[in-house]
Image (cartoon, rainbow, N blue to C red):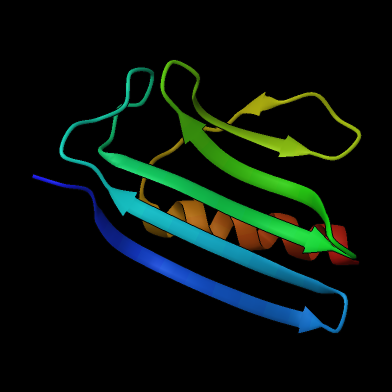
Length: 94
């Protein structure tokens, strides 16, 4: 079984910022993750990634924010992941 694309969306906020979301369902979970998804949710301003939620083999679920150390993310569901990401983006945009 191959990976299956679950979501690929781009949300444009204005002429200089957007969010790019990509989520895949994998045939097996990544080492370090308790779910079968691979994802990358990024908020970009003026060509610079300001915020990214992602997971990778061995590191598990985490987020990156410009000017801050990488921090773990407590994944529960895809819906909650997307909600948490957009809430974080909105806080940054204020």
